[in-house]
Image (cartoon, rainbow, N blue to C red; front, side, top):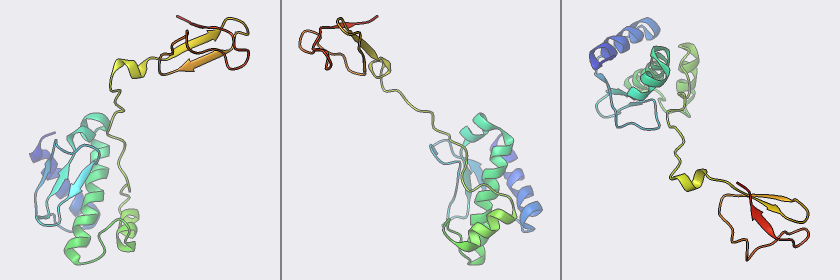
Length: 153
């Protein structure tokens, strides 16, 4: 989907669901990270995160567009367009728009060491210890029986 197709989609959804025309621009903004879309108060344009289309498809983008059009039409009419406003919440329900989009950020692991877990076993009582950080087994001992620890492979 490109910006032209997105513009047509937004115009069509605006007419079908809100019965009002969308008179401004809608386009993809690849700089958006955690949000599905954004309505710009100054210019009245709508930006959509292209990652939402890549990860979840057209239905997710339609939901994001309906949500942003709620902001758009309420702001143009001078009504409460913010998430906390009753007008906004009522219009979301009326047009079946989601309050939040699906998660777009993938959890990041900073480096390989954070993924590693170290498992130690007491040589006397077989107590197991799982740690994120490597221990010096010459310095530390079992907390139950004070036995020596060994690193399990």
